[in-house]
Length: 380
Image 1 (tube, rainbow, N blue to C red):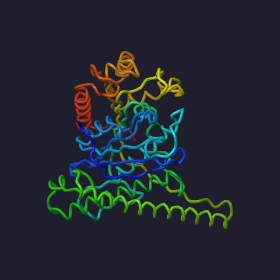
Image 2 (cartoon, rainbow, N blue to C red):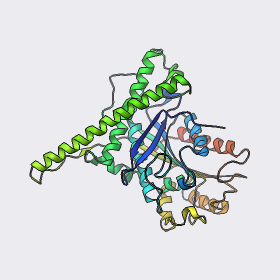
Image 3 (cartoon, helix red, strand yellow):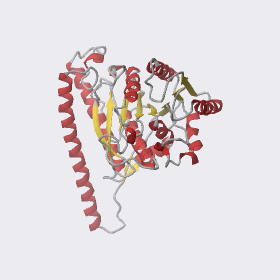
Image 4 (cartoon, rainbow, N blue to C red):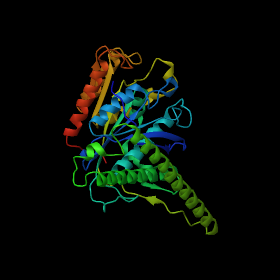
């Protein structure tokens, strides 16, 4: 069975919806040196939390492992109410859509600041960015439904284009910049302390990701503690800065405004969508009785015909009839051939049937490979 290694980074970010902290993980592929100027990654969302869904879900692990095999950086997270994330699962799924958008905003900023070139002098600033990014917005089951309903790219990035210090967008952006800087520094240190003149050796000696083992686990534990301390310091500094600004604001005329932080997303961003066992409204189970998705479902699926998309599902899915899924897939494919769909014969919603896991992984792997070979079209 395919499975994910231990995460390279474990951390939290606040949801832009209400500041609830979301547990997040980032996995770097073993062959980090193969990552090109375009930083490629994927966000993978889990199934419905009240039914046990979390980023530890077996299908998330299986698919996530295949994503790493294609040298893409992977980010998983727990929606509110799942695992160690704060809050509760909502009845409308609107907060969860904001959770996903918050993660996407973080991940795009994180990827854009990664720099695996050997030039030590080239370090990203908190307001700077390097080169384009290519992100797969993926989800399994309920996670696929939220990925589909996630706002369009300009709406995702808008809160991070201009924000006040101490706000949720500020904390997300600061954390993305800090963790990217940590990743860059770890990579450079690993590279310089192994075989300085060899790029090939990095594939097997990078300490921020890769093979499991007690030495790496010990180092990850120390890094986790150090990172939490560092982020706590940053959080306190933000709080003090915010308090200082408020104090100064009280002493000055009311017309004096707190200066906003601005950043330009002047790099190319390409989005693709991967929907595993997608759910279509209306869903005849108690998991979605209160989700008003049928009202605007068509509006949200339009993005699937303007970006490369793969929907993959089983012929024995118990949540949405395969006949309905096929009609849906055919309709979107007729609008644009960049939308692809695959029905796996004999597979259920949970992909436990004999041989179905291999078919799932093979199809997803071929689709990702086709994305990597296709000349990207920037969406932003």
